[in-house]
Image (cartoon, rainbow, N blue to C red; front, side, top):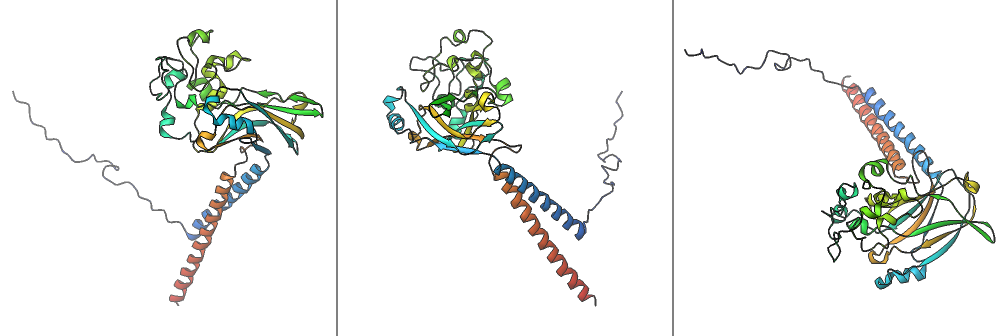
Length: 342
């Protein structure tokens, strides 16, 4: 027995949405409403801009470019054959006024392009997360040594890690200097420290990394980066994590240390005579760059960068100019319409 043929209509359902019977609204703002929105937005942006600029100006900062201040070390690093030879220098300076509150030490590089495409990709996230530390896929050109031993960590980013050692000293008296206590922890992002970077699950890192080689530019293996704190070794070393987060611009600074507020430094860094004792290892002449060390305080809005404050101020000024232009055009058209209606 044949089934009866059922005709299926292609007509849309009889609903308000599909039959396009929904109510339509056309917003028509009055000139007063438009001008009020423009003036209010401009006022808000101008206020925010001024507040952010004043906040950035309130930070205290001192920067010392030591590229050529350590002349002997600078010349030594120009010779690649002397790369392994240690070189230290001391740079005295005076802090004219007290730096209150938390003080941060940064290293700053000029002309170092961490944003190059091949450079950014030269890493192994699987290795850095501790899942398969011998996985060097994607780490060209620093994957393996000449003996086919995998580098840990591998890749161009890790191989070029900043390796100057910077120690800050304070002159209590003319003949007495003390080392300013600095913290090595709390430098990296939480997501980096606890998600993107993990050590293999083992109490013996040296045993876990056995059968690997250190990168060509490194003097020590990754499990010996911090001899004072065993927890700050391997892929969890905070200096290493900070360096592995690549910068977007060729001139950048990265957090190196935090002031430990104790003894003479409970309220910050007092004014007086200081010195940076630097182990000069990181070569910058190869890429015609420079390097500096920065001491800075922070505010609720960040550091001394004026970009955000200037952006708000310019936006507010342009919004107000637009508002005055709209008001002038509106008044001209309104007067013209009244004149023609007479």
